[in-house]
Structure formats: structure tokens, C-alpha cells
Length: 261
Image (cartoon, rainbow, N blue to C red; front, side, top):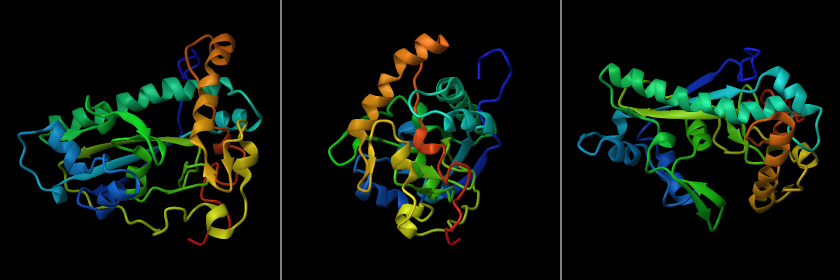
């Protein structure tokens, strides 16, 4: 957490795998945007001279859950982020970038071509007519493909260790069996969509960005940005954060009770 205490930013991770030829990645081009990379497209950019077939690739995806201490602090707040949450967002994600690179380096050292899409110079996020904000590679969509969770009303990924988490991925030319996906519906673990109940994340959102219609990024994004002066003044570092829709809700730390597994 980079606060001098030696506290971990994350709990114990989950890891899943998806095959590079999984048709979901082509589906993302239809449902997310035509700019969305498939694994083979990302690998071709990283290794333009490498002849490779999509089925030779494996997407390695991981979930880094927030610690109980961080979730407890966030649960008690209703407006600006607690220090632990802001630190995990900034320093915890810096660690996540180091982890991406470490996995890539370890694989390459063993003779396996590998790349972390979010670290590639060609990766970018952009304004999307349909989704407001989008990117060439989505870590949450990679995790969905790797059997690690489904999307909630707030667009967060509900995983077996909850929605309060961050995620990362690497694409590699390795042969690892794909993790079975125990779902076919991308909202399968969300009580609001699966059962018509809950909706507690709507009440948790301090910006009013969540409704029965889903997640309004035009409201959410500016609110998250507005937390920067508070983090600087109160905690003494450049950062930001929110995450209230990820805590104090039934899916905070696992797949909520009532979901048919």
C-alpha cells in the first residue's frame, strides 16, 4: 500500500485461462466494438514476425481482490474514498502493472511469446458512441472469457471472491486448458438481472450514476475525477478512487446468495 506499514494491497488472487480461439473474443467485436482486439490481433502487433494460430494462444487472467480492511473502510463511507481504497487504486494498480510485466518476462525467458495488452504501446482507451468509454482490450472481458465472473448492474465483474477487485491479463503462446465457464449469461451472478431483486449498488453510488437502466459513465467518470483534490489534501498523494458500488453490497466478497450455481 506504500504507506510504510507493509500492508498488502490485495488478498489472495484467482487465476483463469481462455483459449485464444474462443469465439467470445470475436463476439466482443460485435457487442463491445469493432476496435476490440482478439488475442491473435494483440499478439500480431507485439510479434509481427511470428507465425501463429489463434488456438495456440492462451489468455491468462487474474483477479486481485480488495483486502477485508479496505472493504471495511469503504463500507463505512458514503462519499469520498477512504485512504486504503485510494492507495489500492493507485499503488495496487502500479503493482498490477509490475505483475503483468513479470508474467510476460517469465514466459519469454522460457521461450514462450507473451504480451500484456494493457502495457502495449498500441493500447488505448477511447470515447465510444455506444459505451461512452471503451478500450482496445478490456481486462474484465478477458476475465469473463476465462471463467472468472460475470457483470453486474454497475458494470463491475462479480467473481467468486467478489466485485471489490481489480483484474489483469497476459496473452501467451502456451498450451493451458481453458477454465470452464459455469455461466452462459453475462449477468448470471447479478441478483438484479438474474432475480429482479437487490439493486443495492444504486443506493451506494454517491453520484447517482446507477439506475435500473444500468451504469451512466457520463456521470460516473466526472465524479471519480472529482475525488482527486480530496485524496491529495487528505492523504498526501496524487490519486483518486470511488468503488462504493463494489462494497456494502451482497456481491462485495463473493457470488451473492440466491444465485443458482
